[in-house]
Image 1 (cartoon, helix red, strand yellow):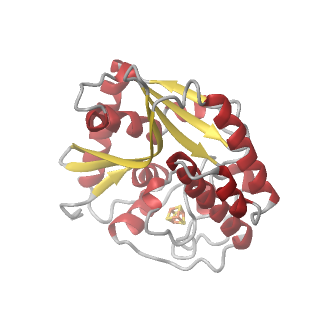
Image 2 (cartoon, helix red, strand yellow):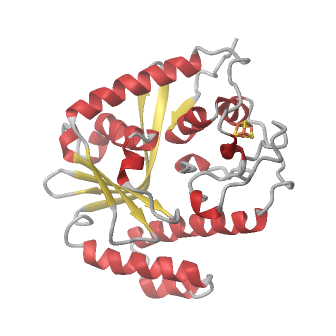
Length: 282
Ligand code: SF4
């Protein structure tokens, strides 16, 4: 019998793990098993890109908090050229977006949570902007290359979790005023394509669909027993998985670099705050 601890917290990250590979969810989030992955090919490049992604998120947070560009640039100048291009794109877009989608109260790296199906569901947002008319824009920075089309995101669990949690818990940022789903927009912004952010408008219908979907998913996971978390049948997903030797899938083909959102789903041993990050896109 699977016994999730009473304080077990669901997130878009662990839900996405379950959807991609139930075994990965079980090993990582239930057994909390750390596993070396020295055998992985391309680990150096993988690690480098993960670190770049984390650095970008950290610097974007500091930018939101008001740290001056001059101060940040001293660090940016020490980074690889690709990263400097990301940052240049970000700053250029930021200036263009300030009068519109960035206009309002800005909150970086903010976590909100709500109760659902007997558990906590959390969302950690790269950036929230509360506009003067009380509409809200949720930003998520993506360092994936190439950028992914919006169609690929519509049914992604992150796209469901983030606005859903804000609908229930975001009133704390709105002086306790009620918020309707129609007030919420989610934007995926890509370092590699800064002027084509993918925008998704939330709605009451989508909110209801997400509530049903997420309730069912959490109930399904928490109702399983420990032996009922099979290995994924999509072996491409094993290519960058930390458990590939544990699962005896160390010889599966590793996906090409540009198929991975390396920042958002660390294939290596995850850092403490890895819950903020999300997916591998195939
Ligand atoms: S190696 Fe493959 S089967 Fe094993 S946990 Fe990772 S993704 Fe799942």
